[in-house]
Image (cartoon, rainbow, N blue to C red; front, side, top):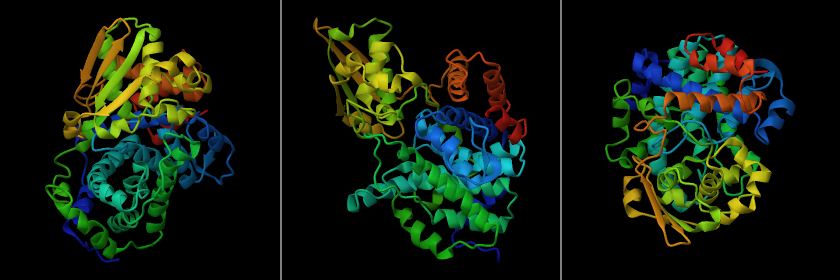
Length: 461
């Protein structure tokens, strides 16, 4: 295959992927990798994912399904681990609009393990793929609005659009692809998307999480086929991506001129709560409104939330499944008010059926606010007014949620969050004092300094 590039932005991608990662990018890449791995371990125990992880008929291979003792073929491990990474809705993301790291880390992990890659190589590969995917993500979200106006169900679930490129590129880098093989990997993946016709987050069937899994599986397979000699489409780079040039204010090509200079991975966020991040700004505003008070749920007349439009989609108040609960702002806010927190065990069938929580959730009203809408997605803000029956009003507001790069979680709180996630997935109980959890937590801390296989061993049974 001759060395050629159809567009200058494609050449910029190739040059960037061949260049080294600086210390700052590696530090942030390491944080993304650790965050996704902790989420994937917790997700391995989630309904639906757990059954596939332990019981699906997969071919034996060199890649581990996290939280289990199974080793299967890399594409199948990528599928299951990526589904697990998003199942608890606690994985990192980027303000542009989606969860960039889940497919990159969980998908690329399978190739890294199969090729016995060292931690630094894996972290660097993830950091590079993250940068490319954020730039594709911006364009795809701009196109997505037009596409959904024409065909409402098309590209409904953002987990499965740009996320094919991420695991493909990460896998190819970890498999020691040549520059030509890496170029063809990118071309194959950039012309491939797992399109979910509908995102049933309000209903919450367990299959929803596997859209991300299928995308990661496709990405790993793209890398494997490219390295076996399959060529991608040069014409697709023009036909698919040229229209993006007019959609972005500064053009599409300009997005790639900053590769290696501006690191989007430095602006990733982490989640203090295991629920859709659209629920977090209202939740943090509620926290500020309550400000440590013990509010009797029966004293609440109403809770009015003003926020950006996308967050108001999370208005269903009576979720019946784990996933539906995580995408219900009324349920999440009611859970915090009634229970003083939002934790993994607040999405079990018994918790979802709690009449006190459901009663408060029914009194939550979400409304679009022009100011917050204008600031989105750079800032994800919300305000809350809690009206009590004694005519007292408690008010709170946030310009962006906790865990944002502008308001990072304190290290101790974040480490404790990861401990709980690992304990949940490894079956160590709620206290998390099991030796396996300590070993897993230490492995996340040293993810860039130890071989990938060593890290995986600590995150498996």
